[in-house]
Length: 183
Length: 122
Image (cartoon, rainbow over all chains, first blue to last red; front, side, top):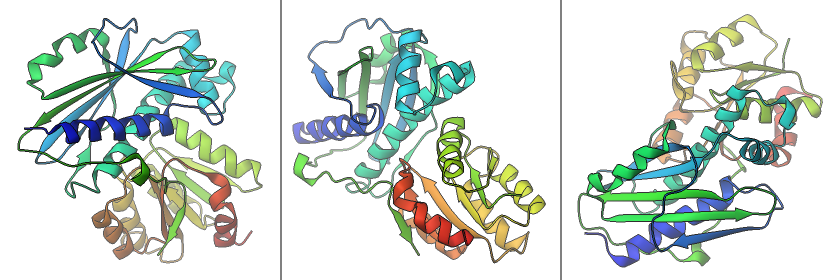
């Protein structure tokens, strides 16, 4: 029910969203599409859903609450690592997922006008083992490599309720974030 | 006494936006959701600008904007939404509530600082 073009479109939009939400300013990053699923080493994941009446997608951001991850999110948010409380650290991770899916939600809104997203939830990484139970038509895993940060993994899982076909070109992706639109 | 009230359920966003504005000479108050925002605004008549998220627990930002106009009867305070949402339907609801503008996250302070200062008379 999902065309290959649609699958590629979901992947491209998520990749772009990841670059705009998880990569600190001025940092080189490489996002790899993994051809096979693997047992990622991270311990937990932030899960968000983006849904329309035609599909539901889940994005899982894997992380381990360790010093390397803390350092990354401190750098991402321009805060002193030593001043990050546990709550602030977890909030920063959840907010990055929220921002990423917000961008994805907005971009998908160009193709699907009736669309909405969830708030972030943190769950155990072992839940990812049951992804196939969702009868999804598209599951894709990504790895994000950045200078000075640990490798992060992200999974995309799309369940379609109808035939879906759309195409996205990298050239069309623009960034209109951060600008004030006055009414 | 504050000039700007930042309303967001994310402590990360509150810190990011609040710290940026403070570093640029503005007095800032913080609220964790729409309900808290209403309380803070009611208690501080010096607030000239509310910068608020949309999706929050307890009370969302658009409902808060509507209540600022209706329940508080405050037609003067400027309200700007700072959100990942970009839905035309939501923007229309915001316009109907008299909000001044809309910013799609992520927050880029340098792009909006001059306007914020103008709105608070700084």
